[in-house]
Amino acid sequence: QVQLQESGPGLVKPSETLSVTCAVSGDSVTGGPYYWTWIRQPPGKGLEWIGYIHSSGGTNYNPSLESRVVMSLDTSRNQVSLQLKSVTAADTAVYYCARRRLWVTGGYGMDVWGQGTMVAVSS
Amino acid sequence: AIQMTQSPSSLSAFVGDRVTITCRASQDIGDELGWYQQKPGKAPKLLIYAASYLQSGVPSRFSGSGSGTDFTLTISSLQPEDFATYYCLQDSNYPQTFGQGTKVEIK
Image (cartoon, helix red, strand yellow):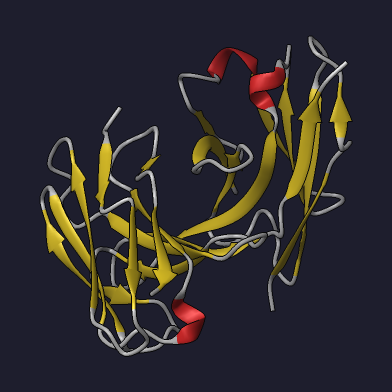
């Protein structure tokens, strides 16, 4: 059974870098192929796609965040990482990682999600 | 970016009711659309992928239809555990974009 577990700092100061990791168990981050996807949700609001890192290492980021986002794979720890630089209060959100895959029948879906980690940006 | 517009933004229904939620894309996305259910304090859960394929383990009262720009999620007989917020997500172009969500409440 594949499980994802996010962990983050809880609180980050404005202008600093937010770092969140997603530990993967029951599968390999280089398996699949998969698209390890980051999504965030500000308190009381909807879902925003941040981007993905493919199991081969390729990335695709939301243009609205692209200048501040870096995603990486850590194969030794079997985890995926998200860094968001120069944060502001608008980056306060629950950050989720999810596994997106291509189904044999065609089409994609995010079939496994972590429980999310809340990160607040405040001085 | 492709804009996804869901309607209604919220609805109230009785247990046993048939519920329909719609999602409209700002351009043709073929059948590249998924539906997700989110309960308070929990991560979203995949219900439907490729517009009409039921994810393994999801009850058959959930169904999806549509292609191009107009899509529908139907719950044939609403159950107490179905009260949640539902999101559509387009898988056709990057950046992927979600609808704004539809909150399904108990009447």
